[in-house]
Image (tube, rainbow, N blue to C red):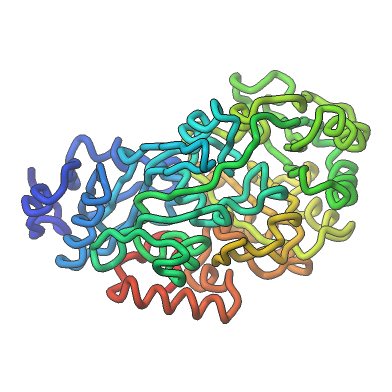
Length: 459
């Protein structure tokens, strides 16, 4: 194989001898499938790719990168990609997809490339559930390290709050197992600091005793958006912690795969997950159902394994630009500003503008403190637009304009997993000064050469 300029001088045979998985270079016909991201805004273009099969492969890859002046990136499912990864050694972890459930301890050990669907399916026979997100197609480890805000969040908090231990390869190219006793500072930083400190090859996490819930989504016509969003801002704060909700304005494509009432329409989507009886759940949702006639109503009893039906997130890769912001409060003026910037009556190239209700366990510190930021917010807002012709050139500015419209009520920060397309300085600003300095101190200790610079990293 003829190597490209960044890789032709690398002793790749040395790397191939050190790892069990494949080593791929630019021009290899297997490369596109190996690095294919879910968020297709960026096409990965690393200098070399290692398809890791185990923690030992990851460690060998990191040592090779350090020895040959390459930065290190990691990709499991491709949801968190923020650049094309030039000049990097990319470790893909999709082969590391093992899940082991201990029903007595209510824990699961999750490999680096595991998707939430595998964890959900392994836990369900035991009447247990992970603190997964709105889509079971997302990688469990990256989601958790970034905080992890899912449909059970107000009852149980962030997914990162329920990590017991982590296996990680740091900048020294060695495998470490860390918990609150072995390395409390690194353990604190990992849970909320995401990929700043190395490549996490496995997590042990708590499972929760949830087998079913009363939940789903209700689609309303976009014409009722003002009434619905104003009703939601008054209704959501009255809900018990057992109820986690969100609401979104969606501009849907004319896709034949969508139910006929939704195709090509702007709609308002109310999402509900209630950990209580069907009677309680129906009574709680009734005030919102009374606001406007539903186009489709899918709220009812469901096994936790059907949790994807709540948000109905897309499953096909697409190019997108997104940003998030956290709100101190959601007032009538906030809703009016949001509607003026991105409501159904405004022609904007956006796919989604979403509000998620926080509070409850999300607002409380974890039992074992961690670096998750944003607990002081009342709501999260996330804005997403398609980076495809003919609107790709204007979408970033439109997304930014919606976030700017909410600035009077914003904390000035976002949740790490919802930060979206932001600068390194903006990522650093997600934490207060004390926590940021603490994170940077851990970064300097475990990654002194700055190998891990890709994605939403600190320093």
